[in-house]
Amino acid sequence: MKNKIKNIIDKIKNYFKTFTFKKFLKVLLLVVEIVILIIIISLNKLIGNWCYLVWGLLLLGVVLVLFQNKKLLRYVKGNGVIFGNRGSGKGLLLNYLIVNDKTKPYCNVPYGNRTEDINVGEYFNVLNPNTLNNFIDNNIKIINKTPFEKYEGRNIYLDDVNIYFPNWADNKLKREYPSMPVLLSISRHLFNNNMVITTQTAERPYKMLRELQTDYGIQVKYSIWFSEWIPFLRYFCFTNYIYYENIESKGLLPFESLNMLGELTKGIRLNAGTSIKKEYEARNGVIRRGRLLQRKSKVCYDTRYFHTKVFGKKP
Image (cartoon, rainbow, N blue to C red; front, side, top):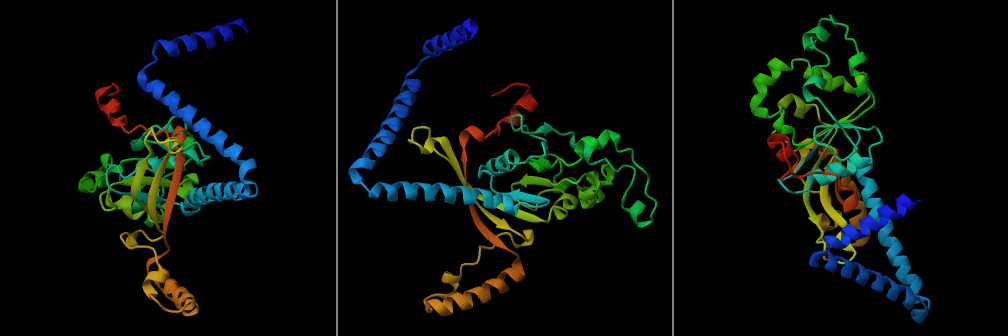
């Protein structure tokens, strides 16, 4: 007990030893947030029944945010590609998938203690020496699975996949990873797992890898890392994305019946809109716009990881 008290006192002392003007402003901002909450709670008695409306709206906002977040998890079934411009927030979206992944997944970039580092070369050579020809000729060489049991039931995430498997290295990858296409095709049979990759454009990854990641695609449009000086919002980051059931439909926008049918009457608009929407999605697959709000404290992604990997020290 004495040691615990001593540790607490030491932490307090260290905090004040390193106390800066910036820390003072953050403490002041926290006080402002607390005061605002106290005022809102105090207003309950002053505005009477209106307080229920205020709290109801706040509760509705929370429910909508949770619904939007969980919607992403309903989309991501199977192997997929997350793509978007540099700095758009692909890592943030991948972070949310990893944080909610119960399989203790593998990843080439660490996401805190949520992932385990993967040996990419080992994984894509699991079926070696089997190639496509072995399966066609029904001459499959039996593989000892024991060294690879660690992959069973654990999803794989590859961030910045073009570092490992760019499309310009097609000949080299075909030569050195001849069993990779088969592995990607039957990974669910072999290990009951899925793979998600991130890339700036969906065309850049190695052709074999790209064509076998076809269950869905997600284009990250932009992300907002709210400033640390904005009350309440400073605890969050926001990501806007478009989900494509058919990756080949990338670039298309979600169906919007109101925009497509103009100023028709409401009944006609709904009926015709439903019909056109079904036809639109029959051709292009389901396309949905989504929004993701995360707490910054849940974000484990290190945007400078490869600096440490290459230079051996943090920036």
